[in-house]
Image (cartoon, rainbow, N blue to C red; front, side):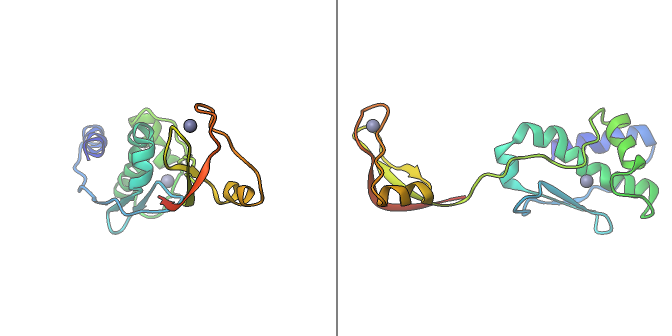
Length: 158
Ligand SMILES: [Zn+2]
Ligand SMILES: [Zn+2]
């Protein structure tokens, strides 16, 4: 919210007008880092991506989405989302690269099979690796040299 406010204050100083602050929700999931809803003056952000990439998220994603709303207030609906108006806010005002997409690697989610050895519990194996073990492949701990054994437990990564 502080980063967003910083963006809005820059815009208010530059354009010598006020901009209504958007509603902010952190409930976006999946591949997208943020979405701007122009007519609802709403920003939705992906809380998981924020946790995973906080620095870049604050540096780039928050201003990216804020610039969509600010461009909308300034220029209305007849502009392209990442056209020259939006770009001029990103580059000219925020001094940021006008990247169209938020390029975050999405972590693989899903089931993990938990293994253990003498020195560690709950070592996560992917389903693929677990399947290889059940076909006879063995994995050894690099620290203690013990073979890794399935604990019978699974976990869901998220
Ligand atoms: Zn965008
Ligand atoms: Zn070990």
